Image 1 (cartoon, rainbow, N blue to C red):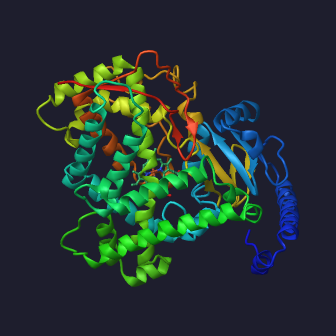
Image 2: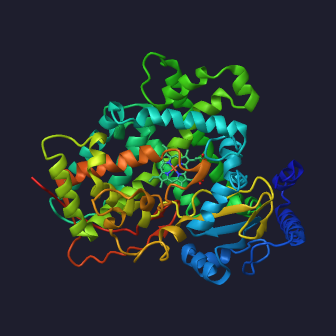
Image 3: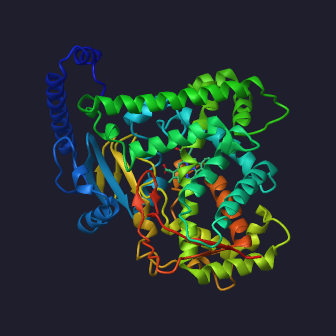
Length: 508
Ligand code: HEM
């Protein structure tokens, strides 16, 4: 809902209170109108009662996943709630999620026009944009650039990962077996990796002021957004909390300016014969497509190069959180850790580095990573989708422009799909010959499914595989005596483990 410019001027000339009342009043009217439009539809999904303006936000509290589970028991696999101004449906369980994303064409593949997205990229990024022909070409380019860097023999990425994991291990071992919280070091290591994948390998990126600025901004963004940005679902809040809103806009603007500065530097030294990093590969991609082809779908060179923002935004906290979950599960399950180490010893030994070629022979290690991704369900509600046309699911009508959350968590922990879903058991993915059973691994929906499935999945899997193999080849990870681990996570920007401590000792 765009707020007319004249209102902005009234606000700056002192009519804040009157304006707030007007905004609230208008929003109530719009919500009533929306509700009436909804009712004209034949058969909407059922759902609980919600407040005017706020919808169901006050009911979700600190543990929205439990609330969604409760609603599922009451209303079934699909139900209707409201996030502030947005009519929303939550789709639960593998069968319903697959039906929506595989059998309804592209009806569920749009993204909602949230305030933050309009501010960051005007709905022209890769992760947050409407589903149209511009997106299809953008996605093709974004995926092909990452593919170059995730090929089995890619030395650039392997070098970056090895260097950063060595630093992580040095830090772990510097505690000399005493307990510590691995959070900050893991976060920094994964931030350094994605930053160098995007902008190039640096001697010591951790001392680079641009990198430190990126880390600080990401932290501030996380603090601000927490489990959800209030301005996305209640845009009128900018008039109630103008200071907070302005601080948010300023944060986005400084991040954008820092990215532009970095991209300008890189463009000046670009050489098509020497593709150094993902940004170079994106610049090269702008030249692979003719001007007519790009113009036909409204994709600009600037948007292509700024895919860097999507990689940095989506590829940092996610992988850091996954690695933290892995450390927690390994410390909590010493028998699993031992089996992984035995497999690494048998296949790789201790005299050479793990490579991606080892992956096909390390089935138990792979299964441990998949189990980590199932239980540490990093993006439990995926990214928000929305419907780009009126559609139907499980006998219910879903109007165009409905926000849709796919509850991946409900599928990853579904006791009809998994025996003892709260038990960490990599064996569940292995067949009787000890090989990965693809039918079972495909049931883990952590990267999403369908045409908007995570574009960085291969890179993320590569990072996790190499990081964990290197760490477990050299270290034991232990749970400190008396430490009680809580295996239920917190929903923040990602689904992250609560703070925990480990002890690390060298295997030498
Ligand atoms: C463990 C790590 C990761 C997890 C669990 C994860 C998960 C996801 C999920 C659930 C989605 C939304 C899918 C949907 O909308 O249906 C997504 C989208 C996306 N991810 Fe990831 N991700 C991870 C790492 C990465 C990395 C390393 C990158 C890039 C460097 C990346 C880039 C993206 C992008 C650009 C999108 C938007 C795709 C689109 O809209 O077409 N992700 N990811």
